[in-house]
Length: 389
Length: 227
Ligand SMILES: Nc1ncnc2c1ncn2[C@@H]1O[C@H](COP(=O)(O)OP(=O)(O)OP(=O)(O)O)[C@@H](O)[C@H]1O
Ligand SMILES: [Mg+2]
Image (tube, rainbow over the protein chains, first blue to last red):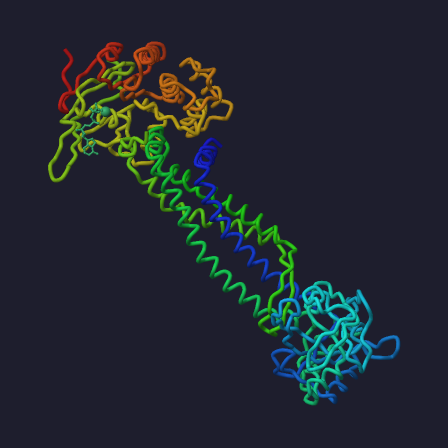
């Protein structure tokens, strides 16, 4: 008790240096936690995209929707599979879709932005029942009407109901806005598949999404289709399919982010080392006094390590609090896997806060180790001989 | 004869500085009986502090044997020596050496942090020690809020709080005015007389030395024989 009070009060006694050191440590922790939040937010967004009762089918060997192609014949065979849910109107819950990436000039700043456009059919809302149209109406089949995801509506001023988007040398009228629960679909523009295929001279679809009557039937369904030589498709559950698309970007964020954090942390650790070294130099006589009273080298080591770890804890709390301010903030970035803009939210979990704190304490301990060791090693008589006053 | 608290045999201490050997303590042998209040005098550089530190177990002689409070110090490891100091030595510094971030009471409590006493017992001991030095009303003051004389009284309280076998003081009145110095000397004499503490005090003030029962002079590393 007294021993920890001793360490903490010494930090307080030098509060300016302490604060600067804590700020340095805090900044690194902030960056560290923000990166974890970013990568996690991305995965969460993509993981929320889709419904686990749905299966996405794409051509065998394709890495993403973009390089997958399914012919009309193939899609016909796939839609006729017995596992597919039949709707009240005797239609099957299946949509064949075409995925496109377009570059658009944003009206406001004239900057280029990449946009994901999906050609689908109105049946899409039966396949993805969690999606809601929040404004306007669905597009009419066979027209150049489109609906936009909530994030697109937020980011592109021109993506409003009754406004037009220009791509593929045609004008597309926005007739509705849909909400996809913060998933990747929110960053897409949807329209009529046939119109888009004609516009972009495509003869094949990219993928097909089916809603299964029994979600548990998926493994058997997948196994059977993937073995079927006539269709040549791969199947994935919809959320897994979209999550996999974000994996590369999440990994990139983690690796570069953590590398950056490591570089910054060297600075923060050196800061802690300098602060603790100054503290040891300033308190040499005090160390001699404590040793004379019977405190051992181990006690001295402990006191100074405790002090630098407390710096770490304070820095950690500061950094995590800073990161908590980012919580639920939405940002948009380019998904490198697909090249399209994707909006997602920062989300702080208790585990990340814990990791941030642990990281901070480790930085404090590493930074304090050398000065604390030096403090513990000093000879008593020599320490007492140095008059700090 | 009463058991000696300190017995030194052929103790030497030499420093080698730039190739030349400097002999600070030259073959010292003497005993200090329990319950003695001894003053060690001598000119500056004569080795008084060195001798005191050897007895306190914070410095080691170059050769010779040092037995204090029944323990031979030469064989002890650093850790054992620290534990031994906790039990047997109370040390009073010329510059008080209170910890600035701790209150008077906490400074006094510090040596008790190394014992197994309960919180309650520690508080009792601290109060007793501070009352003994007349500072019961200054418990919560920080060193910077105390006068030099008061700081040194806290220093004495810290030296006696764990009831050590012996109190060692290196010029305890060196930084004090006449009046405060008298208070400290009176306090030490009382501790010796009423509690039977063995006290060894280094000083070069003859008036301070007079308050001890016995005075020894250290001259060029040799202890002058008592008359
Ligand atoms: N670490 C050291 N290295 C070399 N010489 C030292 C060292 N420590 C002390 N000395 C020398 O040993 C001698 C005795 O020192 P000591 O401090 O014991 O003297 P002292 O009698 O206490 O003097 P003072 O009255 O000034 O306090 C001095 O000449 C000093 O220079
Ligand atoms: Mg001296």
